[in-house]
Length: 146
Image (cartoon, rainbow, N blue to C red):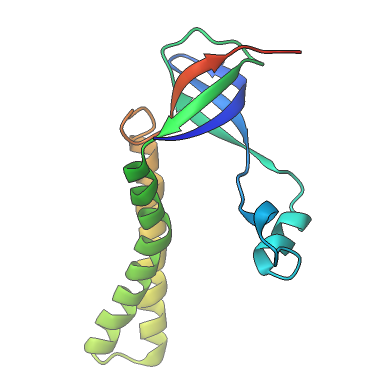
């Protein structure tokens, strides 16, 4: 189980919006000043983002919580976000090439496959917004120390 600590910024019925700090390996890498990832981190305006997580705990804005996500879910999510659109793009181009269409139509088929995958992912995420097997969950609340 992967865990991440964050702070509650909004409370919904059965869920919370949690602000978490972006994780990066750049802090321990010797080449961080010369690589593209390190440069992107320096130019980023904020090192935090918000995650919606399901919970059955009674939480308030400002509480510190620990979010959990299974490794399997992380791998499946990475596949869907990164590989699925790429495969759809290549599949669209491959089908158009196999049918021996013009180069312009091959490009259009590739773009259609890519956009179709993005639309599918958006609808998939909306349908599974409250599915505990597919979104992060709040594992526990931590004591706030000031």
